[in-house]
Length: 166
Image 1 (cartoon, rainbow, N blue to C red):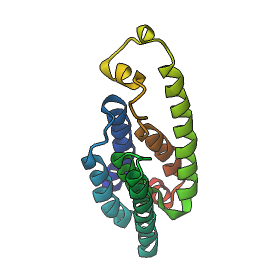
Image 2 (image 1 turned 60 degrees about the vertical axis):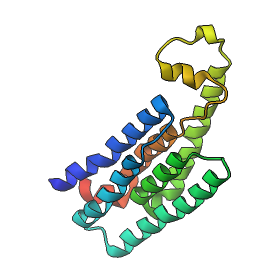
Image 3 (image 1 turned 90 degrees about the vertical axis):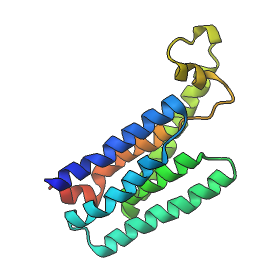
């Protein structure tokens, strides 16, 4: 029963991260930390073999290194890099290619949609402050939305999910 509760942490945190990024263009570090902190108890409760846990850790650390390189070059936000790495920890090596492909596809669609949105005249933009902020050309793309969407698509295909859901 505890495992089911922990299993809900992943989608809940991903949705919170997407909403936070949309509304504030930031992803709080605590969200990535919650994902990291809950992964290990859940993996052990689910009976994920130690080798598999190690490979999940490799996936997360590998993505973190690449994410920091992208952050250092100004290509990617720091919160995005940390969320992507924490998500990769949960997704694992086996589903990592699918996860990253989903991130790219959703992120590309999101970027195109926002670029089209930014071509609208300012007078056409109505809504909350975040909608106006997203309309500004110098504002970044809330890529946490793409990461969260890809994570939600990828997670049900993971061994961790299958072990708990069965």
